[in-house]
Image (cartoon, rainbow, N blue to C red; front, side):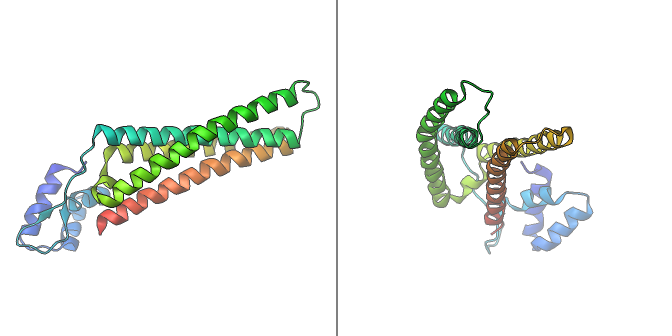
Length: 213
């Protein structure tokens, strides 16, 4: 949330005819960060009028919160069970000869992961498409606090998984216990987490770019 003092300064400066570049420079010289300045400037649309024109604020409804929570929950479930399913395929391709119960357990895990994906992934796609449609209809939804908090939480989780996966891979390499099966599983984790991280980082940048227009 933008500082009320910065918002008031932007309002007064715009009323006096100052340009956005001049306002940005003045606030930066005073020690405000670029993020704080951008938040304050974003309160006003670049619409020519005799007084500054405020941008509408996103109204966070219970429905919006529900849709975002369902979407991100289904994203986590889908990512987890996609990884689990790929793990089982790797186990089939490179079986552990010492594991007597391997084939039976792998089959059970494949059925469970497939069932979870059949339910969770379509639900994720459905809620994501509904949210995207709502955002196209009302661009102010891009500033939704629920949307941004859950997106940043997802970035944190994905980054943590990537870091943990890299540490585990390096540890096994240094211990001399690196196997092809382990490397493939590490790559699966890195690809899934990396895809989520890259997409939602792009999403945040797209939201910021759209709000600046």
